[in-house]
Image: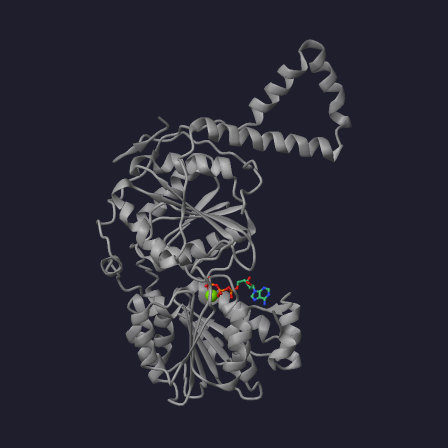
Amino acid sequence: MTKFEDLGISQATLKAVLKMGFEEATPIQSETIPLGLKGIDLIGQAQTGTGKTAAFGIPLVEKVDVKMDAIQGIIIAPTRELAIQVSEELYKIGAGKRVRVLPIYGGQDISRQIRSLKKAPHIIVGTPGRVLDHINRKTMRLDTVNTVILDEADEMLNMGFIEDIESILASTPAERQTLLFSATMPGPIQRMAEKFMKDPQIVRVKTKEMTVPLIEQYYIEVQERNKFDVLTRLLDIQSPELAIVFGRTKRRVDELSEALTLRGYTAEGIHGDLTQAKRMSVLRKFKEGTVDVLVATDVAARGLDISGVTHVYNFDIPQDPESYVHRIGRTGRAGKTGVAMTFITPREKSYLAVVEKTTKRKMERMQAPTLDEALEGQQRAVVDKIVQTIESNNLHYYKAAAQELLEGNDAQTVVAAVLKMLTKEPDTTPVKLTEESPLPQKRDRKQFDRGDRRRRDDSRGSYNSDRNRKKAPVKPRSGEKRTGGKSSKPRSYNHQ
Ligand SMILES: Nc1ncnc2c1ncn2[C@@H]1O[C@H](COP(=O)(O)OP(=O)(O)OP(=O)(O)O)[C@@H](O)[C@H]1O
Ligand SMILES: [Mg+2]
């Protein structure tokens, strides 16, 4: 491990980085920071959650001349949430030098952005559509830019942002430094990217697997119609601190989050058809832990860094192996452990091998848990809670009533009644979930890649991503909510 002190960065930035709690540089940081400072073009690839943001953020901040009131660096990211997150991290890294960072993304009031742009930010972090919008309106000039960074470069190029990116690059000086970062960098995309870079150096943190070893990876073979019950049982057994459930389409996400809510989970959905205010409030609630389960399309697959995400469930198998890598990478970040579960319908089994071939890691097969196991999981959670309460030794108010109960009943019966009352028994509230048709049977990687890749235009807010640890200690869910469910069309799911 390298110390930040040895990477040739200024005292002000060093102080800021240490204040962020970073003690030592991660491998991608120690390899790319010195090269980034030299001004050469770079393609950086390292596993999810290994600090790529600071790997490009530190040299970018270092290059900024704060006395110059002009935009000197621009970072482009595929989603609004990621642009906001990256701008927050850059702000922290640049706090020592007092670097001004401004996020620019679709769905936010444009006149407000124009006013902020007039305050001469040094670094812009934006989504492609909205950045281009400002360039066309001439409300943002990039002719003083010396560094361009494409975060999640492969995703942006893949998803049809290539023209926007090229237009943005065309409005920056030709002698700029260009940096590309992602955990995945498929060959064709790398070659295409090299077109707008100058002799880029490729920095790849060598690892055996593309996914993080600290993420336990499982798959469960399950029929489409049984997926929801299997999901709820897993949630009951595994009791994640925070979980993300990925679904293939926006409708899927809406229906799943509604269904989970009906069954008493605190769940909310996020996808590109929601207003920006809603997207932000859902994410905020998830970060705070008011919402335990975030149901998402691939809009949340890339780059988002939310601490406490212990489990990722691929309710629908992702459409390409890269998406798998990024989705499960929302857990197991910065040295933490995580669990990833992928549901595979019998007709989609061929995708498993394709994913495993790309990640160079085998997923372990897990049997779908039974109803009894789910109940047992819930009961265990209650027992753990009771043990904790006993240990807290703060029970004197309750002792008289306990004595009274024990006078009329034997101890085992009393405890069993308490357990029954506190245990969340399997909920059979009917929910509505439209069946997704399975991905077409494709066997090789080439065909796998040719999925329905539609353009995602962030400035209009439609992220058309409709291709869309060990077991956590068992924790009972708080605030169970039961609502009378309506029976569903076109399909009603129920236990049994
Ligand atoms: N040197 C470090 N020491 C400790 N924590 C770090 C260090 N560098 C980054 N982190 C933290 O690690 C987490 C992951 O970092 P980051 O989001 O940059 O990962 P990433 O490689 O970009 O992942 P992804 O591929 O998912 O985008 C963040 O919470 C970040 O603050
Ligand atoms: Mg990142």
